[in-house]
Amino acid sequence: MSPSRVLVLNSGSSSVKYQLLDMRDSSRLAAGLVERIGEETSRLRHTPLARGGETREWNAPVADHEAALKAVSQELAKDGLGLDSPELAAIGHRVVHGGQTFTEPTVVDEAVLAEIERLIPVAPLHNPANLTGIRTAQALRPDLPQVAVFDTAFHTTMPESAARYAIDVRTADEHRIRRYGFHGTSHAYVSRATAKLLGKAPEEVNVIVLHLGNGASASAVRGGKCVDTSMGLTPLEGLVMGTRSGDADPAVIFHLARVGKMSIDEIDTLLNKKSGLVGLCGDNDMREIRRRIDEGDARAQLAFDIYIHRLKKYIGAYCAVLGTVDAIAFTAGVGENAAPVREAAVAGLEILGLAVDGERNAVRSDEPRLISPEDARVKVAVVPTDEELEIATQTYALVGR
Ligand code: AMP
Image (tube, rainbow, N blue to C red; front, top):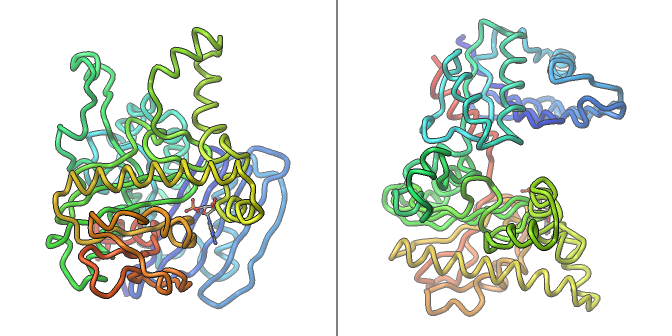
């Protein structure tokens, strides 16, 4: 039998998340996470899903990504799923920034690694960790195809009118400044799954995808192809997020530097880590914000209102970009779980053909579902995202025999 397993790796600067899938039926065999790599308090959590096994967890120092991946391999081996297994077909890596070069998932070779490295200046937080993950996996299984699946790839179909900022062209090109967009794997998966929910082919529908997690982004997808998205050169632009500001006048930065005497690094930290919901009300978990609102907390209410106001503006903008819209789809942690966010985001948008049915919206489910009234002109959907499955599917399509 030909190998049918794909290991999906998402390597961050101090963490590695992984899932092992069997692509014969897209089932999940194992999933886990190594956190706080390089610290004394590293932690590994591993769940052998295939056998309904119990989650195993341990705390012990994990020095680097190589040690982390070895630890993952050992845990997998305990269930007969080790990295040395002949049933492993490939390793699929989430890579955050593929620039304009990578429009599709790509089998990794030296030239691909060099290009991912060349893109580090536009993704200084993410690409170095992704590269480390790939190199470490290569060292452990040099014979195995490693596939890079890029967060930006789905957005490379955007027209220049959406992808370019109105900045002096030569300066922008010299520094590769343009809208790249992120969460592409999720936007691709959810826009396709939404078409399926409507009983149509992706080419037949226009969809607005609202990926609302701790990071958040919106995209306008025409006939299966992205035509605009809210994140930009980096994941900072667009919607209000857990800790990121999203859109703000760029002059805020000059002002903080000149008048506030803050350094560029301090401003970077302020806008990426201390803003968004956490900056507005001290909490970035929507559950906690809703709980505080229920208790009459005015700061939490204002944070929620700012979050919704921004979301509404993007829904309206992408209706205008697309002209006709078949569906808007809510996904990720907030989008899938927070009924009040979905209700508030769509409230008052009847003029755009949008409405939410209260009872349908209140239903909890892990399945893709419609929450708009039966006769709605534009469908409103909740479509759980599955980035790991999408990475595994794209990886296997490249290497599966
Ligand atoms: P993600 O980045 O997609 O994992 O989303 C994480 C975020 O989802 C958390 O920070 C929460 O704000 C939000 N979230 C998760 N579960 C719920 C829930 N039941 N209700 C509201 N928000 C939730």
